[in-house]
Image 1 (cartoon, rainbow, N blue to C red):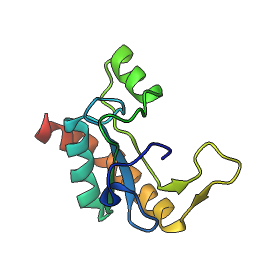
Image 2 (image 1 turned 90 degrees about the horizontal axis):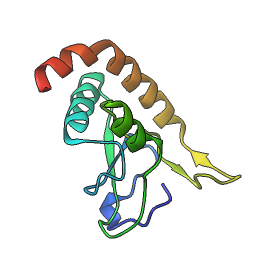
Image 3 (image 1 turned 135 degrees about the horizontal axis):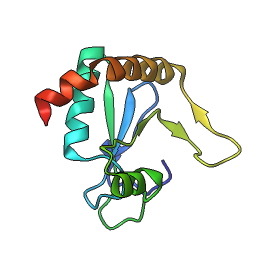
Image 4 (image 1 turned 120 degrees about the vertical axis):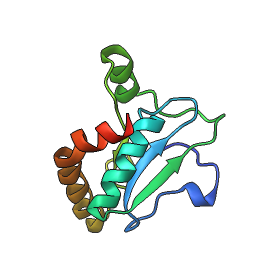
Length: 120
């Protein structure tokens, strides 16, 4: 999470849940639809989500997610565990987020077709 953050409330925290990255300029892969699907699945899995939002005038993202979504027409969401020092030799993460992510991903793959049919 190396981008400049807009506000104290938009910073992900350790032990606060899995992080979904959102950007109004579509610099991350998350869309309104995929965010809604993820929120529903997270609710069903009992997994908390945190939003990571970057100021609109700050550069960020534009990595593989948006490229795949555009070129392949895939529905995508930028999601993962909170960490410090991304792309560094010293990265830090917390163990509860790993457990929460595993539970979220298991529920996501088992419930995705049903949830998508209700959203899209």
